[in-house]
Image 1: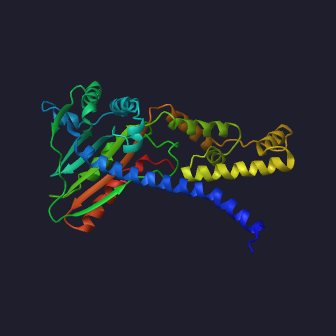
Image 2: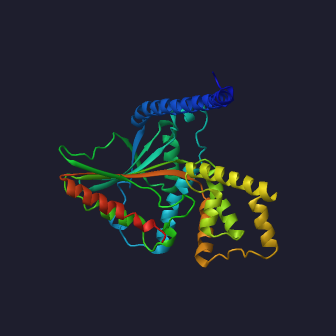
Image 3: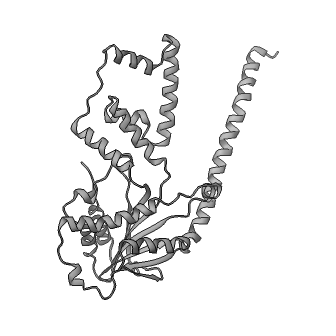
Length: 341
């Protein structure tokens, strides 16, 4: 004989779970299909870009170009490149259904290539942005020579390859050390590491950029606001959720559930309780240290700039594996100058 007291709750639970499971399966299926579509679209897109070589005009005296300059002159020259990248960051980020399904196609790749004893600078750019980029370069460097050419090849027959990509050690809201806080041109360390390559070996540094969506700066500004309210830097970062998407979702769900539990027992949320305690003088707001104030200032200064999504990758080709690994390590170490400790 059936026990309906047991059967009905089980049926009801299955009725609730079935659409949830179906939604999860459909969502996962959609993202798998989207990934396949993006991979299929990215390959032909990558090979359809225009390759531009950017260099000094032939009439420029190389000895004059190598002369030592003052720090003020260095800052002025590098700030020209900053203006160029600010112009790229000011472009409207691609959006809409096509970019959501197939991915964005507005990437520009700035590449420093060492091959056959020479160091060259290239830009791989979508065809529709080639004229714009040329104008941006010439606006800052009127004498630059820009030539369209075939793609280069750093790989040697029967060679060994080593590669790496960079990732930020902490949230993107925090600033990196820039040329304004350095005593010498940071490019010197990078090109010096590339100049150590032997005959027949090659290396390329690829800096892929695209304009960031305008919402990128809001997280950083919220962190600074929370710090100014009396939270430590770590507390502010956690409260705003300047962590991974999964961490933000899990933290938000936990915090909402916890607030409901607190409100259910006392009739007040955690924030209301903390505010009352502060008003009564029971809790003392955190006083920012000099380092935290400097960090907050750096976050605000970074948020005031045009935003770029960036990937930096290195690839090396050499006659043996140990040499390729050594080249890779030297080039990667040249980027440690941008760390703020």
